[in-house]
Image 1 (cartoon, rainbow, N blue to C red):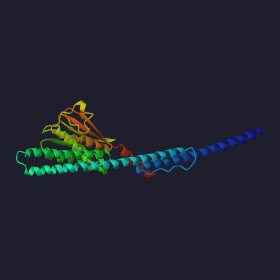
Image 2: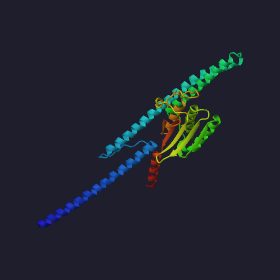
Image 3: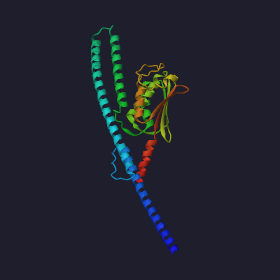
Image 4: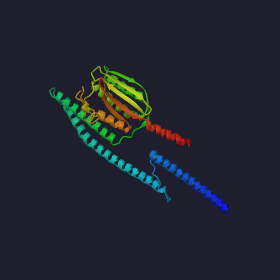
Length: 315
């Protein structure tokens, strides 16, 4: 009799253990499914910006879902606030542009009218005044473009481009402007970028190199691709810069004492703003013969997104 009781107890214990295991497995599967659903929802939010719904259930997993939904709501709110500030800044810049360009245009008009009737002794002075007005107009134009770039006012048109083709177009322009200089290009890589803005970013660096080299100076462009990044190195033989200039070379109005031609010092600042809009970085360093400015465009993020998209499609 006692053995039968122990047997029934063992059977009941086994049944209870089996039921407990089944319950745990079901609970684990439900939790796994909710975690997977939450992961997909977060991924959708990151890619499309859709808000997350709050959980209506009352269990141990609901606080996490609600916290994630609350975080997404705050991110959307901050993005809207940032966009409002950008619009206000753009309106402010447009107003400045109008208020400054109008008197400059009038000043130039009156100077050109005076130049037509002035005698020969006044012609050099008036010509210099017109040149200064043109320089001021260019400076104001570049400053406004720089600030618009920094405030995300321009919409970038990203597409897969061959970086060597963009570099070749830029070099074609500079070979006409500087026929005595030696330009070279090596390497190839595909890069997701805004073609027009990337053209300008590269052109600004090459222009800076031309201004810091002799008439027959040498400027080399090298493109290199790795598993995680695309590199573009622009190197000249102008002798480089002082160590104290490294921290300021990409700042506004920075002009090297070694520059052969005079400029406003905004080109490299605009280049940095363009590169930052491409989630990339710039590095300046001295080489044996001159200065090398290196563009680094990370490609890991795009590769991860493509892999994630392919994984979702397979599921």
